[in-house]
Length: 156
Image 1: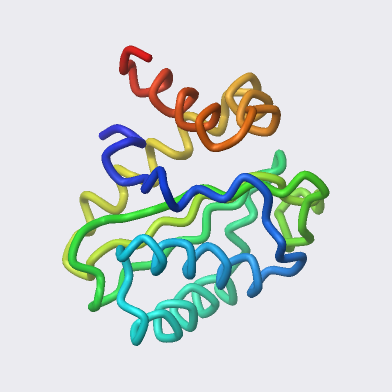
Image 2: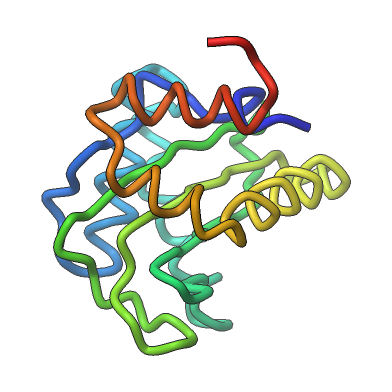
């Protein structure tokens, strides 16, 4: 699986306005809604599901990265987006550090294999120090998209 299979380029947020956990998730959800990837009436229900997942344990996995994710019955096709915060957000990350890169992943309820494959792809790329640094330093949305294509092996 490739990041470009499920990341919605037009929903990428190059600088989050939000400064706290739920607001970050909400801003990313509205970005997907604005790109018609999520139906407006489902936004609050999905946010509730994402926050319930956060209660089980923070998806702030460390090294400045968080991967909020959930499966939900209103999601028909796996979809995600990325957001960046220059100043970082306290996301209760496992290492106690502020989070600068967010990968939001939404999957249908019946997509355990696909959901895990997408999480595995995300976890593989975010382990790379250069990838994290390049994404934090990328110039605009186009720069971030170029990096995604590069890690997916797509010619840019």
